[in-house]
Image (cartoon, rainbow, N blue to C red):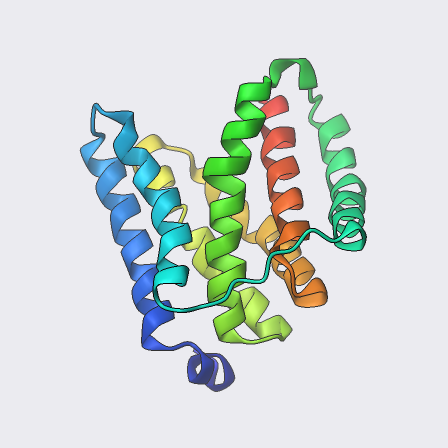
Amino acid sequence: MDAQISGKMNLKSISGYLTILFLSFFLHAVKPSNHGFHSALPVIMIIYPVAVGHKVKIRFSPKDFAIGAAVSVIILLPYYFIRGGDLQRISAYFVILQLLSVSLPEEFFFRGFLQDSAGRHFRAVLFVSLLFSFAHLPKAVFLGEWISLLSFFPSIVMGWLYMKTNNILPGTLFHLFSNIVHQSAL
């Protein structure tokens, strides 16, 4: 691990990541019949940074919103057309679920907490993107969704957005639109 990154990553952030990773492996391995257990992961992603006293930077800024939307269009629109996406397959329920249980909690935790703890430089973006991709390993192992490990690449964009704006909103938008576009092209 880079000395500059490891110097800033503390026991709280490393423990938080390992907690999320362990819980994700556990939930995917056990496959509890009560789907309410699966909501524990996004809840912990939001509660943990707050519980350890980390102030996650999230604010509604029209400028940051526009940056997140513009980067999403520039990067995701070609993918949407190349993969033959169909937005009619996407329900409002899916969008809300993705926002509240995936995009926002993951950006809150990975960018607002881990990347903020690792530093404001591109090496931190790459390091947290590697952690983000590795956090998708349970989905790959237990559900056979190996493509989820490619989340490293959109994570670089989300990390860069956070590094440039110091706000998780643009990355959350990009994350949400990435998941929508990916689902529309399945």
